[in-house]
Length: 126
Image 1 (cartoon, rainbow, N blue to C red):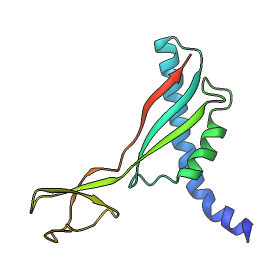
Image 2 (cartoon, helix red, strand yellow):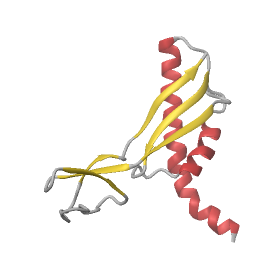
Image 3 (cartoon, rainbow, N blue to C red):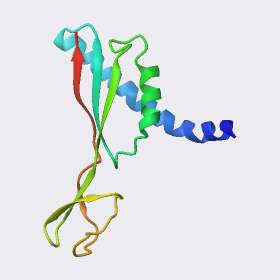
């Protein structure tokens, strides 16, 4: 049973590994540009609609940073709730799913204004 579960999640892990490799590449570029030697902490902001699996991201990060300026760095992830804007009643509200309707006037769909992002908020470097 565990082999099947691991196999099923391996596609998701590949997605997160690719994201982490891109993050490492950005940190390497910034290390050269801003003259720092290593990264101690990485703070990522991840929206609830960003299609990122948090645990897979942790695992992928540890693999991706090996041999980089971020080897041994702690990964801190800040989860951001999704927010939608209703043009019908001009209300901004929390949403759970991408195609939620307005909880006040039932207008559909809401414009997503927050929660799809994945970005580096900041780095602790030395």
